[in-house]
Each structure stands twice: as C-alpha cells, then as structure tokens.
Image 1 (cartoon, one colour):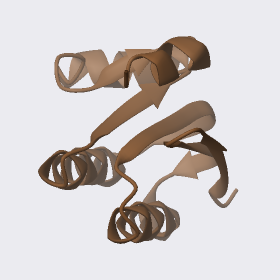
Image 2 (cartoon, helix red, strand yellow):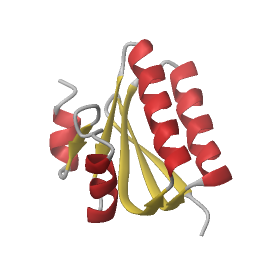
Image 3 (cartoon, rainbow, N blue to C red):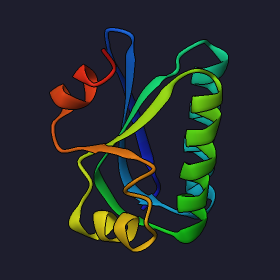
Length: 113
C-alpha cells in the first residue's frame, strides 16, 4: 500500500494525515511535502500516524532529519496517534525523548501555544 498524505489546516498548524506504510520511496513524498511546507513558511507541523501500519528504519531516520529541519526553521514537528507498533519502535530506539507525541489532536494543536 502506498503512503497517502492528506493535509488539513487548524489555524497556523498544518496536520498531515498519513495512511499506509512509511517506508522506501513512499516516504520520499512525505519528506518533499514537509520541505514544501517549510519553504512556504509553515513550521508548525503535526504528523497524524494513526493509519500508518509500518515504519522502516530509513523512514525513522528521515523523521529525525525532518524534525531537525523543522526545528532549524524555528518550528516544531509533533507526532499524533501512534499505533502500539509504532510507539514500540519509538521507545525501542529511545526517540520518545526526541519527539513530542500526542493521543489527542486538540492537545497536539494546543501545545503550539
């Protein structure tokens, strides 16, 4: 299954709803979308991973890289609705201290204020 990316705006916050596998070439579309948002001056980003069934190690590295790019642009990248499988991967790789994660979209949006 290819990665589907739907974008929503909640005020100044951009929410990217992802569905499918975050792996391989499919992840490149997400990296390009994040770059485009940063180029347009949008640096408050939420990745909704509720419908992501799998993240490979390259995509995890890409998430770290894009988080750094967002932070360097003066913004924040937050993760929303991690499945148990994705959360386990984040914890196993000790990235729970790096990424702000949320179970509630309202809480994630509120955290930018």
